[in-house]
Length: 172
Image 1: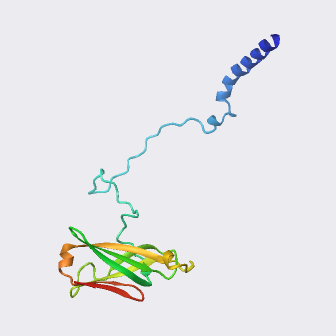
Image 2 (image 1 turned 45 degrees about the vertical axis):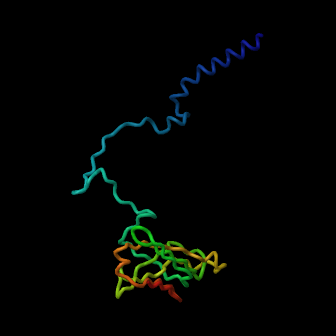
Image 3 (image 1 turned 45 degrees about the horizontal axis):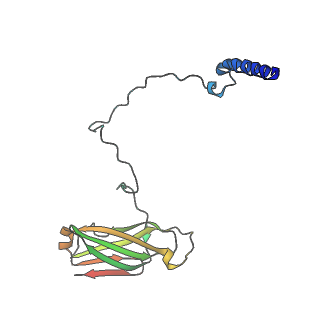
């Protein structure tokens, strides 16, 4: 019984002494001191901008138009499907690259999305790393699609998708 009382008194003394630890340099919470608020000068807003509309960010869904696309033509265009929609058509293209690892696959318009002599030309392009193995054809298959409106389709009779070694043509 005396031992319990003695240990309890020692434990209470130790805990009472920890109150000074809160302000000591040994406490990691005190290493940086207290934070103090400070006023910051306001940044001037650019002229003719709405502060409620956020600035446009470069994401995978919205790309800046001023950047140059560094893609190269895909080796072969293996399939082209034109799917009608209520507003126009979706041109879906499948191709095979020379090596694995191609990314950022696009159908780049050769005619700026306007028919020339009744023909729309697209080139199947991708960014293709040169240090990748060739691999099986299934691993080298890429897909791309582009939407074409009814107004453009009415003025075109032929759609051509060009690869590095071949092309696919669809006529009305």
